[in-house]
Length: 598
Image 1: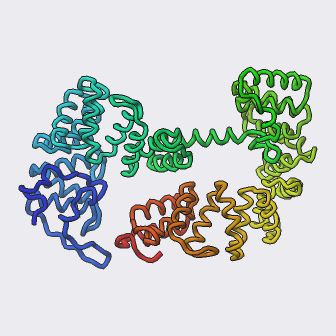
Image 2: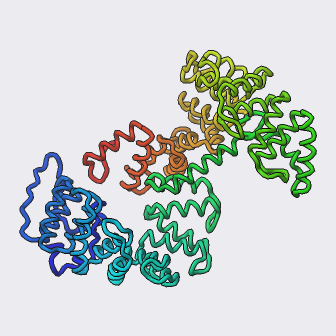
């Protein structure tokens, strides 16, 4: 059988996806070969026709029956292209366009696309039109772009249909016509073309050429995202972030942004940075037990009944009068109002910083810690100054303020504005921890567990972690649960890990997932394990990513899926997880069906 003989329908419709593997080519049924192994000697017969040269080139390009070798692939495909085979001309053009097996050369790619396009190859027509549309390797020419894209679209090429839609949407080379753009996007989307799903989704989200329909837009973005389209992932994330067409879900939005960012989509990276920055800014408020994450017990009382701007102005005026008279609590609360934009005042971080400094100067320990953090970070209208940060935080510690002791410990650990001194850091941590400052208890527990600057003591580490956990501190509960698990007290660990997981501690969620996977402390439940591990893995816990990859690799409680397994193992490996790196190495060296012992 000749898969690419003259009567084969594949002559005009085969997708030339040499660069993405045999599955994309749809050639699995055509290349009947034995998989090469180190023990197998593969004898390749010299080709006698253009079709055989092309098939042989595809074998080398996809590694089916022979070692994967783009240079050898290019040689055989070139032989077929020189004999006028349109698929070979298209494939070789794509190799030149992307620099696979040959030097990147857009001029050579254009010439090959032209030869195949003149023979009616839809893929070549689409690629050639795209070069003219973008001015890649040729002078930008919208008329020629329209000519070749139209020919490819007329043959039902989904990519060309989507490009044609964009041309009509923007009036590039054709008259601007959103209705016609809509028609072409729908044609391409009906063929499962991810970018067309995104384009169509944007029309529905923006109410352009169709009535606005957020639910329909989200559905289209999801269809694209399910095909691993990065823009589909990004826009579906945006819908989740804004709660448009789907339930508002920031965690799911972050997960989708991370998927798109991992593939290099710049917009997703910017969104993640923005959300991270927003969280940091939101954390910089004032609270009794955590000056870096402010919620003062008085804020609710101060803002109660201040729903209207007029009442807010009254509160602001009253606070300002007291603050001007050096009343520290009033200055602190006024700074908080400006920080949050609450109580009828506009958000103004510079003004907030001014009143925090007034509170600090009036003797407020919390104000002094906050001002210290302002100088440490260079925020709220002050320049970064570690020495100034240390002075203010020392003043709070001198008042025996637990948060002052805690941040002074951090300064000593890092050598910021003070000498780097672990002994002084531990002394400050003990002062804070003894006053039930949970952050200090967690850090002291961690240092005792690791023996960092102090003799390791598992029993004392567990005691401090438990004291933090009993204050409903999520990190304390997570740490205490893990210390219990280390003692193999799995049943005792479960409630603490649940407490931490319910408050968003991803590491605790992952540990619970492992419990359900292994049956430690709970009944074995692969479905629950997968759910918990996925939640944790999406928060970039590398061990959870590794375990999830292994589940999909072995088909444990989930359908075996090599692509999904590899996805999670690769993410885990990026976090330097040694077992994931080792397992990926094994898979790379020929474990058929991505099987093999883990």
